[in-house]
Image (cartoon, rainbow, N blue to C red; front, side):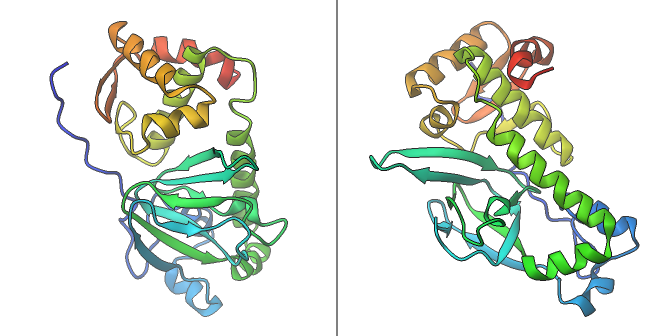
Length: 247
């Protein structure tokens, strides 16, 4: 295919000293109660901007003490574990506006590793302070529960006996919806994860992932040039993904 112009990298970065970024996972819950950054300053829960983390740099490691959750401002974070045989198992990919660290709440230690797939910037929230604030703001508490539920749902997304085409279609539709929910393009995206990481997450061979993407392109569902991907037939892609997404 002809090379398509590269998509600008999504970044959740329209906030300022008084306002949360509109893509922040907690902004709607706080603003619904009239709480902006100035209102929250006295509670010591203003976010800390951390980063940049370079590609391949660890954000946290499995077993590290848990003190904070973080929202991705820019870049993509991969979470993974390493099994007893030394093989990596990808748990997920976290996009701008999404949270990392939720799975560490129960045991107070991170149960997986998190690394940057490209240049990553984070907003870090002290979890003890966030929990205190949630007790005062029912909307924030509800949002926290909702995010925990979504995190569990993502982990179970590919647990069934699905074909390679169904898994790939569900992965692309899910990415599309997650970007769209944050105000980014639903049809054009830069895949920050490589074929090997994608295959690991989907529990497929890397060669299978390449074949499926090539077949999707030949069938007119997508256009792909290296890591630039455009969805061209969303209806057919969603039909393929329906069994995995339980729709």
